[in-house]
View (cartoon, rainbow over the protein chains, first blue to last red):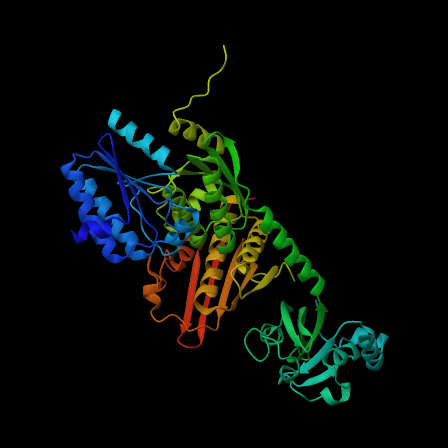
Length: 127
Length: 269
Length: 147
């Protein structure tokens, strides 16, 4: 499948009903839309409770990618999946803020690194 | 203050010649112009500053000699002095062959016996050293102005003191974000107790900083909201309260940080 | 002269040409407000208004000046602070619109800040001419009972 082929640029790991997705640096628009459909389908099929998007490899994020990832996260949220963004680098954050991007921190949670992200998901599921 | 040169008491004491000589002796540029901004007097130091003879300057328009950013527009202190009848002073820069010279200049209106404004007198003070001192001070305070300090395991504090401009806000943001990564902090206290003022631009910077820390998974608490700060924010019509956790004191902020981290401070019994 | 009614007792003019000049305006505004006898709250509010004016000059006209002075009313019964901002920028196209909260022509801005200046100060006058510049005069009087 073409979709899956380009999606291979990101690695997805499944641990105890959670998906850990490592976002690749400089994903193309095609990669992103493929990613969006695959991740939502997988979450549904595997009865996923939480998704962690790991940005620790990302050096730069443009407005379009940001919005795509934001939209995917919101879509997952609608499906009842908790979404946590982890590992955003200071440089990436500063450029996002400079671009004036509004980030919905109420529905999408953030953590400094993967470890803290997993803790956050564990907390949520134990509630 | 009486700006009239033609003060009868003064005339009795010293002659006009002597007065001009006195002006010549002043080791800083002194110039007088008429209402049309034509130079009617320039002392020796003033002529030297321009690299010209005193004689050739008489009758010339002053703005064609100095070429400062104030020359021949509404920012000119001389123009203001002649309009308002008061002494007006300002900082300015004179473009010279070896770069801009920073000056402070003072302009007073000259009046005839009837009290009508007939021109103006101006003197110039070289403030290059003061300006370079200020620049150095500014640079030093900039370097010292962004101390993000680890207060507790997982808790950082950044005390904001003095004036926040966009460059400082940028430095504050970088300092905070890097420290968050370094210390794995979950909460940062931005304490604005000592801030000189809050306006919409500064509030905007603070909001941006709190947004940025949240993207790193770190909650930002704005503490040190004094009654004056709170009132100003309301007057400015800024919605800060909805999006940011605010506390009036740093200790309230720290208590909130402990709450977020599920920690409790207890007295040993 | 300082006791003559309606006349300024002290004034400072700050040239605005860079972002950091706003900081200088804040310091001067606070100092003069304190000298005029305003309490700390008002001192802070006046500084905010002055800074707002300075920011607007820098942002929209790139250069201009802010004059701050201590004033007395005609009866010489109360002191106040006057802020005069002038620039030779493009001018404001629609002053009524600029005086509305949250209106801005710049992205990422919280608004022109002018409505808040008007709210903070007791008197507010704005004069704008396209291609010539903007002049703003704002005054705040000390309330009776303030020491």
